[in-house]
Image (cartoon, rainbow, N blue to C red; front, side):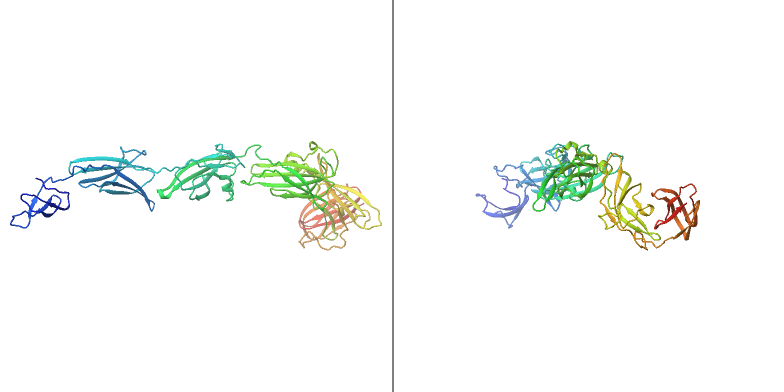
Length: 579
């Protein structure tokens, strides 16, 4: 009878008729046994095809699959029942579909043993294990396969407006949202963006900015406009933006899975609105009122400028206007007194243009005021503000220039839309000085932004008061604040110039009838003007390094004239009599 065996081991054999009970050791199919009566202590036996398997043992063909990520390396482990008298061999296959268990391509070499591991794999590929089991007793081979669990992770997103409507073209100024809720399997996510001009004429994408990694979070709905605005990056019109969303799950060995989509930002007609409402509140104990803007629209995630310009007028329907203040910022607050109408114009400026809207408030001015009569109420053409209001000239200033003689100049800033200016001068005005001389008021119209008193025939005076207004087509002008001027007296230096390069000149003959010569103490380069008593330029000469030049007076009426020299740094005036 065959001797029982279970491969390597220590076992006990007993034959009740011939053999004594004894202990034997063997390896494989070779073993030693001590036979009673033998002359040797041990006898050698060799048995071929030796096998023993209890009838209750059934081959277990099932196995387990485990996956792990160790230092970024994806590892697949197969674990069998590892039964005695069985040989286990393993093969790993890569395939193209999840759950597939046939038709794959073998990776690496076949491994033997009850438990094996395959390392260096890509978690986002598809694999299956094939286990071959050979039973040593019944000479049967079993082949079983099992798909490797596939870790599902994917970057999925789309763009939406603030109402959740998917779109890929947005108006400049509206918030742009990335909806990544459809992504799955992620633990961390990353958002980056590049851009190129739109329409595209073959330009390459330009790196723009990234929002970086957000860890321990699934992809939510992300406000891209706000996110990049917080980094001082504006999603500007005229560009196509390329957005990349990458998701990650490091414990599962997924370091990067990305998707890319694009959107366009453009300027949309009638999108921006500078409308607001104006509230008035009493400032207790002051007699003043506060004007405050409410319900204005702001666009926080773009480059925008809010400017509030305050005008006043004695008329309920507006005009003439006096500019009171210019305030910058999203909010408006301004304190005023009663007795005037105030017109507040809100200017909203963006990369797409400028929008203006006005409101008014009249405090104890008159009755029957209707908004329909207000030209600075409601939507306004912004160009009208710069050209159509004919505002009062700003910064009226009295200057004393040069010497020998001193030029007494009245000067102001230019007004948009003005063709000329009217200067009203009152000599010996009681508001400016005490004088026994009679008041004399005259108006002078000039095209420039200054008037030199030396060019005028003036009454005897101790001082004067002056103010100026612009001349604009189709608009009622506003006068500047009046200025007092006591004259220059004896002034030896040009108060407006820092140059000491003066060019004194002499006129001869003076008085003159036909030709008058202008002689300089040193070479003069600049402009010479012959001016009449009303300030009108009669003749002009441009000279270079001149010592002497002439003017012809023969065709001019008798009277007072001036010759003005302008070297570019100094202006001097010389009185001339034609007779």
